[in-house]
Length: 490
Image (cartoon, rainbow, N blue to C red; front, side):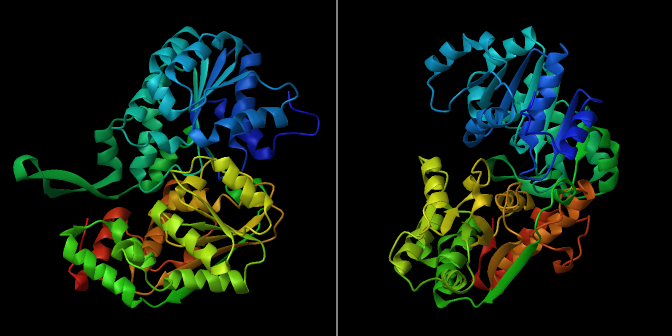
């Protein structure tokens, strides 16, 4: 099946054996450890035995072409794959579906799956289909159309495999709904709340300006028992158990808040009764965007320039949550150095592959600035990059792990990794950093094998309390931090 010089790693073989015991399950392996390959081999083995006829591989739009690449690189005879391109019109897709009998695997993104749901319902009703759901966090919201459509298909599928590096993006409900929406478990939501959630009555806005009282989840209980209850539906391994991966060195710097940031925060306090957290973070990182005027180089950008000049030996990924900030600091870096030292990828980037190629191949380009768009599907960065810099921090540990997973992957040539995290004192930076620690504590209870990289346990600033749901805790802390500005957090 595989080429003579290719073979599955031990953890991939163990995953296939484990999944064989259950028709539907979740593979929660760290980024860069070969989840797609093991999914395709698993399908192929069952197809050869007559258990399955076809495979529908659903993933994010920027990962589509990698499935073809995996087939060509690893399989002795490349699999017959029909990849539904994101830019194809409905008429073009209909034409290609008419030829689907000639293909054993259909690869499609979640957006197009929703648009063409009737075709896939019929396909699953008429065939024994393996439904592979890559980036499984796409179905963590039970109210989204994506989750509802996938749930319909999962109930019809002969086999279901969900793959994700981050089954718990922020809280325990994420994992519960992934398992339910993929038909991996049958466990009612009221039962889940009773057994695993801390619930308190809260007043929330209602219709016509009236407030209403609801039971709101404020924390979790019996978290380890939840994991144990459904352990047979999971396959997990730590990254150190599946590959020899270099350790992380964390480089934190403490910065002082600038007058421009204070001006930007005061401006927001005057403009908004409830200030969106995003704007507070932008004010902290790039106040010129808030003020609409030219300011001095932000203190964080200055710190990045110092790091680039004095410490950077190879290339570097620079993460920010916001496209506006990504474009702003890319222009700032390029202006400072007098040439294009940085390229940028964000949600609106039209040709991601061209930008990635320039970063990989042009020796003068040292920085890939990007939003969460670089976290999924922008592969190959581990060949040239050993450093991730966080211009600002993500909200969730899931996003954090996806970003650092761009460099911590099989195929790296480096012997150590660096995380550069400049933080402005007494700001949203410190609050979000502590929030990540809080989420790590929860994640370790729910998914013990998942986390061992990036941020270390001994750096935890507050002890995790199961009565505190991380997102609620963050908002509470932010209100205290910015009370002096008259700002209320959304």
